[in-house]
Length: 399
Image (cartoon, rainbow, N blue to C red; front, side):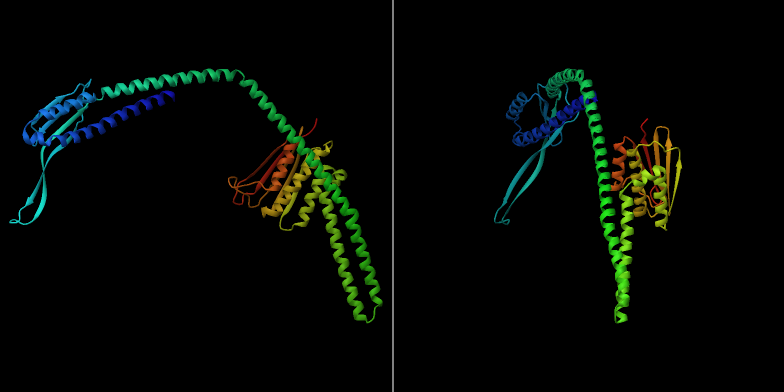
């Protein structure tokens, strides 16, 4: 790479010399051609020759200047003091004779000008002087660049001596930061579970109690309405009280379902295997447009509560996402214990997604963070265009 850059720089200098010679040659030919009109017309070339020699003395890049008549017969050649040989190309400009005429009154009023080529002036340039100048400049720049590279190499060598230690310290800092992040996520998840339990207790102990009392009062009103006269009014009151009874019963059932979602006491009663099977059974019962099944492999006794809660929550979120977004007709859950790890696989036959355009939602991000907090692995994949979605989770189990 370095040699390529050096060679490219050298070639660019060569191109600069050729471009400069071409520009100077064309300009010099034009200027000297304009100065040669009188010399050709008078046939005296001494003054023109002195002018050309002065120019050649001041510019060592000019190899030769030649003057020709209109038939290209040589009239004058002046050799310069340029070192080396000339370029193969030359720069030529026509020597023009301009005549301005005026018509007399007898011939009619008017003026005009005629242009006639009376000769040609050629300039040949020699690149040796400019090439030597550019070579010296290039050598100086190359010397400075080499010194800079040597200094950079020395500095890099000094820095590399402590690079390994610095890298190890940086990696350890990253590992410590990642461990701290996992500990923080665990504390956050624990706090969230505690808050879920607190909200579930408030719903169970307060809201549901109020709903039970409201339902009993509505039933009491319905009973009292039987003795209200006129009878039509009593029947209307009884019907409305029965409506209130049904509404409070529906709210009570919704509260119980919400309590079951918020609290994980089902884990304490049924264990992880039973809790997941019960959850899948509830999803299958409450969603007629999609069938859910669960397969369990291995012994799940002795799994710690933190791992069990994480497994339960990620399965719960995965199934909820299938109901909300997948438009699937079938979904399955696999719960398998493989030695010192717990493997969870949730699959569906829904619309899927394209990996290039997918952006994790809050639910998927929450599952990922829960799994990473326990140093587990989380992968989600889909074929897109109706290929369904497959989530695979692996959680380490304490020995």
